[in-house]
Image (cartoon, rainbow, N blue to C red; front, side, top):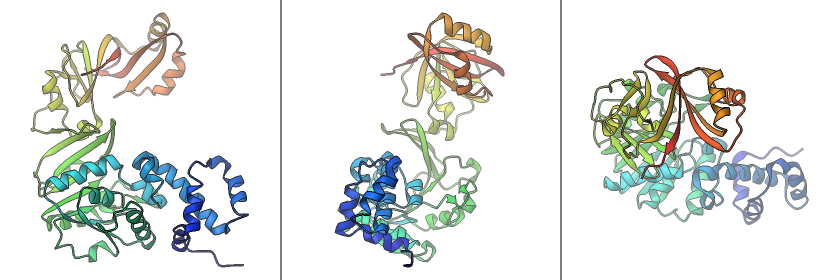
Length: 396
């Protein structure tokens, strides 16, 4: 019985003409038909190559959400690399910030499959991409070549702690935040630990460290700028910047690029629910900048512990979704079911913040039906369980 092929050899086989042709033919394959597909392909190709190609085809399909189809179907991935890779729009935002800071040569430590290195190279920055895993390095190198960026991206297989990056304008560090048991929440359990990354960042003229968006604010160094980034309303990551604006807290919302900078405002006052309810973007909430949004809207909080802002006046803002409130009622399932039935509500967007009620469970109990729609917000108002009904407002 032949010895099993190594992961690196299996990947290298995909870079041959036969491997690339096989992969190209799997672009639209259906994973639910994998057994039939594998059986058919093994009549013409080695079994190990077919297995590697099918695995890579699945990874490319997953990668489309982060990289877009045009790039994803030209690139290569490892399972861990897809999981931790930065979304292309976020990587592009960061690359543009580095470029605006005058960075021309950057060391990307813990480069993974090379997604950030690709964005940096496309911004005209020469990149040293470092990872300690040989297979990951082969994948990153193949991606640089596949996208025509090999002249700007040098891939080096090494322990990042042993790399001399003193000649580079900037560092970017993306520590591994997943282990054998899933996501790692303790920054000191990252690989490398956050403390090492911070020390490395302080030695460079400019640096950015990618961290989990749930990082406690007290863990953020005083000499770092902290930026929380959302894309399409979903919080994607936090970044610690060094050599920029120490102590700054920032929320950046993609794809538009609006960026809100903290001004150290006190918590907003609590006030009764007005005509409009504003739901701040998750990046704003993570950055603790709800007070800045409330000031912009001349509004207040509906509860001192709930990040909903209310106002009697409609004001445009890039940092919060707006809803016109039609009903403010103590939470009561029987009454809510009656309202839904009387108003013929067949489509309901159910939101919760500070409520123990699960939206999907509530949806089943409401038995929605009819031509109309509404937004139902389950929350607390001045400490009391409350349901708010309303409609979304389109802001210009």
